Length: 437
Ligand code: DLL
Figure (spheres, rainbow, N blue to C red):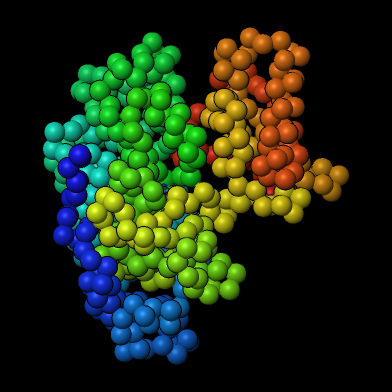
């Protein structure tokens, strides 16, 4: 049997009662820290009539006000800072695709704890000091590169700080330096797999054994595609800039959800419409409270990610609660002719039917009615088919997507290599309705 793999065994396997007591103790201290040092949050608490003394443990968490992305925009760039700027050693930032950037600050201790979280994820994926970890997430303001880089150092692995891009060079380095663990977005991993094949290599030619992929939603079908083309086991990792970055939660070898690092973060699930806390096992919006962060300690932060939590025991021995893979944020959801549609639902159909993960969704409004066009790239083998065959394939895909989402799309199969590849977070949806507004 596999020997159990932990980076911080005592914490990762701490009995839940003890973990809750630890969270309570940290929460009391953190609420006081935030109330005393962040005037914006103090006002929110005062308006709600909550004083730091009212928070005596995790059971009182629901009394605190929520923080949302709008609050972070409002307080941009320093309004949420809870320590003097001189005590901070780093900033990271969101990509700002949905509005103004969010700037997150870190003290040296914040960086240290964040890197521990990433180290836990690497060890859970089988990493050790014997490994060579190729970090192909972007470096810079994005948290992916710096987070996994720091985690890999903590584990003692040899770290290749590749960043994203220059895919053939990525593969050359992988071969020359014997990379055993690849860290990047799942869409970039799929692209690396495709390029590997084009360069004339197969999964047996590369030394990789595992991948740690996250930063965007990905389906089980994409996981299988990557596992097959790269010949690895693919692990999921989740996180967000506001809460630190990658490593808020990660998959263990059981791969039945991602363990949330609960010694640092309390997770809640709420009803996104009413804010009511929902019981475990119910689907809703994920909310995090940071227990240890010094510089940028958000409390009850609404992630907009929709998922389910489970504290059922995991056979890996970790006691920390697991979150189901979020299949999209509430703001990724498209409303087409009144129906809620997530891009991941369409992706699952495409891959199940043997198409490549290269697709693009275009939503528009014509004659007062929403239209849904799905562009899907053919593989070179499929491209050799006759026009009649291709048109039959389009009809068949339309019907399968209709069954999945309840509305009819127009599917257009396009020539190989006509849809742009992603080296970071993939952009799959163009919503032209927004351009008309
Ligand atoms: O994406 C941090 C990260 C880097 C996570 C590398 C994992 C690996 P942001 O750019 O702030 O931070 O984006 C955070 O990305 O709220 C989710 O909607 C989404 N997301 C992150 N990881 C996953 C995942 C980084 N494993 C937002 N599955 C989050 C699905 C994910 N969505």
